[in-house]
Image 1 (tube, rainbow, N blue to C red):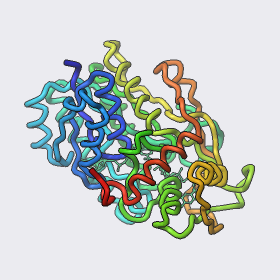
Image 2 (image 1 turned 180 degrees about the horizontal axis):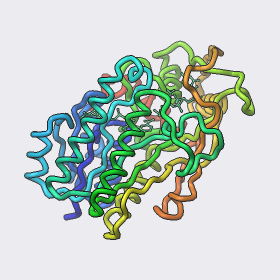
Image 3 (image 1 turned 120 degrees about the vertical axis):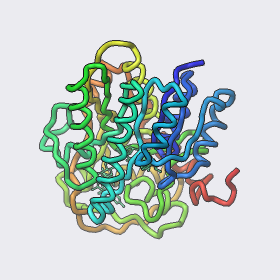
Length: 348
Ligand code: NAD
Ligand code: UD1
């Protein structure tokens, strides 16, 4: 039996794809999620996709702020390492409810780290975000670029990064990898698991999907006057399967035995794509016309953000395989098969 990895937030969008890659790679995945923004169906479907290895996925409905429950789990299971996805991620909501974000994301993480420490489990992969680069003065963003948080959500990522750095300084037995994701999109090519946001989507790809399946009438393009090739914002979109595979590479680095301290890696493709290019690619993949409403800039949005991927390539031996075409193809496949996400009437 392979090593056991705890995946917090493993029922969520990126978590469920990573749980699948983990068991495919021979690990055992213990999933902890409070299902606040997800469905247990995602975990069941990941197990289905894993075939025989699906039996190596074990789900626990636990909130990270419930320290006692976490402690019990660690006491009953030998956990080698943790991949920590659990957190709230809606920027607008974080501006309206900062205490909720500090409580959930920061207190939840401190609890997790303390329980890990108490049980001698000192290897962690943490989901950080390109949001920590704020409005970058220079692109591509390298891991050394200046850090700046634009909102409470971004501050939780920055604070947690700092907490991890302090922890590694305090005790050399800790090895932590901070992964700064750029813009995760797409879905597993099977169309069985994908992104299923609650309420009105905040991000471009889920909104495009909902327009295509006629849940939303039109996509609002936020800003057409940026100094970019077509005036719209540029981002580094990365296929969620590539992103998930990046976690396995990070985990292998953690488990190879060397003292690592706290390391940070960008996970992106290194390529920038504009909103209108993304719309065109999605129209091509879906054969649907996306109605657009051209509007002003969204407050807090940066103009151009994309990653330098040299460090992850060199040190994690990882590189994204999929392009925009596959990202749109798989997003559309997921959206067609599950127009209402995991609540779609045809779900198994
Ligand atoms: P998601 O909402 O689909 O997954 C997060 C999961 O964590 C959910 O299943 C939710 O129920 C769970 N959760 C939240 N608070 C919890 C708590 N206190 N205890 C237990 N479970 C809890 O989001 P995602 O897109 O899969 O993102 C995963 C991580 O990656 C998050 O930390 C997010 O901030 C980070 N991230 C995401 C993106 C993105 O665009 N999706 C970009 C950069 C970073
Ligand atoms: C947003 C968050 C960021 C978070 C990231 C991943 C904000 C200000 N930033 O980043 O903190 O880490 O999601 O969850 O919310 N767009 C439209 N119409 C839409 C939606 C988006 O035109 O309906 C545009 C945006 O202006 C941007 C691009 O599409 O240019 C991508 O937007 P989005 O998917 O929300 O990601 P980010 O803005 O990069």
